[in-house]
Amino acid sequence: MNILDLLLEPLGYEFMLRALATTVLAAVVCAVLSCWLVLVGWSLMGDAVAHAVLPGVVLAYVVGAPFAVGALVFGFLAVGLIGVVRDTSRVKEDAAIGIVFTTLFALGLVLISVTPSQTDLNHIVFGNVLGVSAIDLLQIVVLGAIALTVLILKRRDLTLYAFDPTHAHAIGLSPRLLGALLLGVLALTAVVALQVVGVILVVAMLVIPGATAYLLTDRIGRMLVIAPVIAAGCSVVGIYASYYLDTASGGMVVLAQAAAFAVAYAVQLVSRRGRVRGRGRLGPWRPGPGLGVLPQPAHPERTAPPARG
Amino acid sequence: MNTDAAVEPAIDASGLTVRYGDVLALDDVTLRVPAGGVCGLIGMNGSGKSTLFKTLVGLVRPQTGEVRILGGGIREARRRGDLAYVPQSEDVDWAFPLSVREVVMMGRYGRLGFTRRARRGDRAAVYEALDRVELTELADRQIGRLSGGQRKRAFVARGLAQGARVLLLDEPFAGVDKPSEATIVRLLTERAESGCTVLVSTHDLQALPGLATESVLLRRRVLLHAATTEVLRPENLARAFGLGEESVA
Image (cartoon, rainbow over the protein chains, first blue to last red):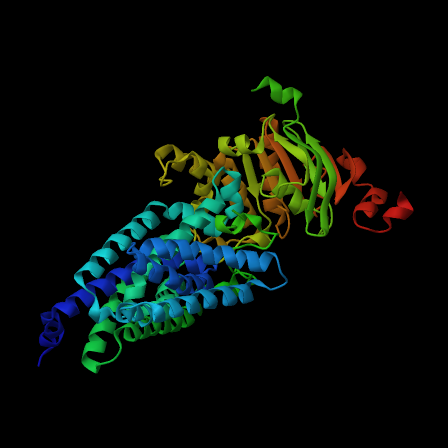
C-alpha cells in the first residue's frame, strides 16, 4: 500500500470526510481565538467557559433552541458568577473560577442524565467527531464563520484590548465591550469545538495553538496565521492517526497539537541562544494584564461587562 | 484655539475622593493645570499618583468630586482623542508580540473606522511621530527589544501620533538614559508651547525643574501645589516622602 492509498482510503467514507471538515474548521476558529486568550491571560477562563456552557447547550437542546443561544447565556452567566464570588467574598479568583465552572458543568451532567435521548448529549462531553451529522456540520460552519468573521474584523481592537486596555479607554473605546466581545466569541467557539473534542478537551484547542505560535514569532499578525495553520495541520494528522491506530479522534488531535507545541518549544530553546527572545531577556515576568476576565479593583479597565452589569 | 480653554484650566479636578474598599487612595484632591502648562506630580509609591491618572482618564470613578478636561467632560475628551496616557513601565507587557510601529499606530485607533484599518494619513502621522522621538530605525523591532529610554519614547510617540491635547505620563523617566530623558523633556516642552497640557509624575527630581513650571506634592491629598523650585525644597519633599509630615507641618 503506498502513501497515496493511505491518504485516500479514509476519504472514501463520508463520516471521515465530515470529521475532517469539522475538525479543521473548529481547530482553525479555536486557534485564531487562542492567540488573544494566551496574550490576555484568559486560558483558564477559556476552560471555565467551555465547561460552563454545558447546561446551556443541554437546555437549548431540550427547548429546541440553537445551541449557541444557550451557550452564550451560560458563558456570560459563568463569568458574572465568578465576578460576584470573587468580589463579594474573600475567595480569590482562581478558586472562584474553579467553583463556578465545575458547578455549572455538574449541572450540565445532571441535566443530561434526566434528558431523554442521552446519546447526543453525551457526545458533547467527550466529543464525537466521527458521528457528526450533516446538520451538525452546518451548525458548526455557520457558528465558526460568525466567530471567525468577528475575530478578523475586530482583530486590531482585540489586540489593543489585550495589550493596553487603559489606552483603549483613553482614546474613547470601551475595554468592557471589547472584553464582552471576546467572551461572546469564546462561548460561540466553545460550541463549535464541543462537537469535535468535547467539553473536556476544548481548552487544549483554545490554548495550545496560540501558545505555540507565540513561541515562534513576536508579531501578533504572524501568530494569527501560524496558529490556525498549525491547528489545521494537527487536525489532519490527528484524524488520520486515529483512523489507522483506532484511537479516540479528539484525543489524537489534541496530542498532535501538543506535539507541535513541544517542537516549537524545542525550536525556541535552540534559537534563543542566537537571539534575544522570550520573557527571560525582556525584563521581569509579570503575571499578565489579568489572570481572568474580571480585574482586581486596581485594574478596573479589564472588566467584562457581565461582571458589574 | 478655543477661547474657553484660556479661561478654564485644561485639567480641572476638584475634590476627588477615591476609596478602594476600606483603602483611601485619594482624599479631596483638587488639581488645576492651565492649557499649555506642564505640571509635575511628586509622591512616593502608594501616594495615589496612578489612581489620580486613572481618575483623570475616567477609569476610576471618584466617590466625590469631578473632573473636567478642556472645559468638558472626560467622555467628550476621550471621544475627541484629546487624552493620551503613557503608562509606567511596570504596567506594560514588554513581551507582547507587537512592533514599535504597531504600538504607535494604536494612537490613531480612535480616529479609524470599524476595523481600525490605517489610511495613508495615519501612516504618515506614525512616521512623523517616530521621527520626532528618533525611533524611525527601530520601528519594526518588537517593543521588548528596546532600551528603557527607547520604550518610553515609543509610548510618547503614540501620544504624539494621537494628536492629544492633554498628555498624562506616569513615571516617564524611570529607568531612562540621559539622552532619552533629554529627548522626552524637549518633546514635552514643545508640545506645551504649542498649547498642549502635560501632567507628569516622576521620581526624577533633577529632570523636573527643566520641564515643569509647577509641581504638586501628593500623598493621598495635595500637600502642596506651587512653582517647581518651591516644591523641591527639602523641607517640602520631606512631607511628601513621609519624613515626619507632622514635625514639619
